[in-house]
Length: 158
Image (cartoon, rainbow, N blue to C red; front, top):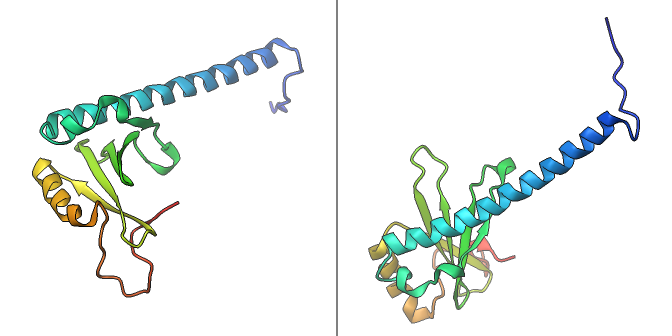
């Protein structure tokens, strides 16, 4: 028996149920995104307070983080960013590999002004070494290996 599927008639109980399901799905998706944002902010603040207690834990307030939901189509986990001033940003996420570990990246603007250089921070010592390198340039990354002209090989600024 072959049956031709036709859309439900407007105003029918089935059409109403489909509308309810669509609205509920949108509400649920919005709630999930809100939870992911909140979770990303909490995870970022918790990570810097435990792994960077003498540096970022003292300098970055827990309210400084802005969370972002996952981008499922691109396989990107929820994350959070905090502006440090001077164009520097922290980005925190939980890696999606088998270990699910915290990944904290310092995004540093280039001296050329065309982009940012990301530096994955492994621990507080790593951060302190990077800050010592950045101090003479007031928080700008110097890239000396470029041969393609005035443009750097960093992440392009939007």
